[in-house]
Length: 135
Image: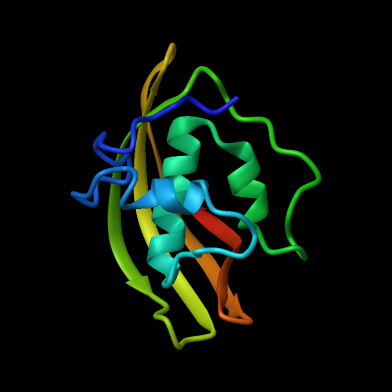
């Protein structure tokens, strides 16, 4: 169950915008949109979905060819910070890559997820395809 976040709260992706202006508008959208215009915007919205526990959004933005049937989020993880290291994939590209480090805390302590994620843009919409975790 997603954790409610006020539209005027700071967005978890740390873009500097409020949640309602940034990732929240994508989380609240229907299949008709709006959709993130770039691969980086989609990756940021997916990070924010992890932060608020919105598994439905994560599944809805996962490319159908690689999407799992279900997704169980770890309730013990609290996502704390996102660092985007590089990003490619603009509004007119068909492929994108985003390298990021996501910082989290859990009962076991602090940790990070360093990943290079791949995205595709089909029919004007960006999709997460998969990613490679780095040490």
